[in-house]
Image (cartoon, rainbow, N blue to C red):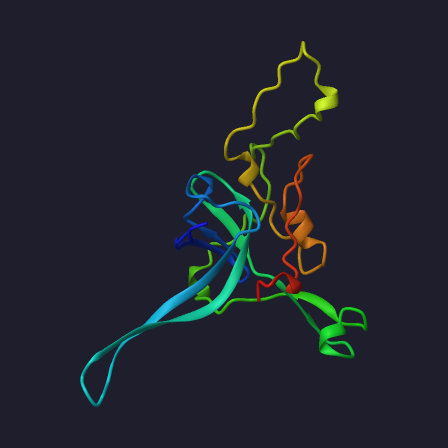
Length: 180
């Protein structure tokens, strides 16, 4: 698979962003994007020759929700505290989201409330509940891309952040998935 390059379109919070690439570009849940900037170009002080550039990696994010032309991706988790770093989750440590070094003036934020008129959409009926006589209307293309805002720093906030449909599997951004 060829690498997919994109750009950050919006920053929702210190751990979650919108990227300007979606399913039409080959993006799917679980895809990892590395956030980087190019340092340089640098010049050799002895020869004056152009040495080129080098990437500065700021972190990585894992795609959790995908629409046709955009996706939502968030950082992984790390364990802090506890008795031993590798086993801290077993000995009193806690799991926290990895925060990115972002420009806080560019945070657009999650919606903070539900108002009268806020859209709702039903869950897909299971195939057992649908008979041949019933016609099921398809969900809008972007409906699966609508995430719920994080519900705080609890460990279950990631599960609340991902819409669940029959047959879908939630992507867990755990520290052991190589996304650090």
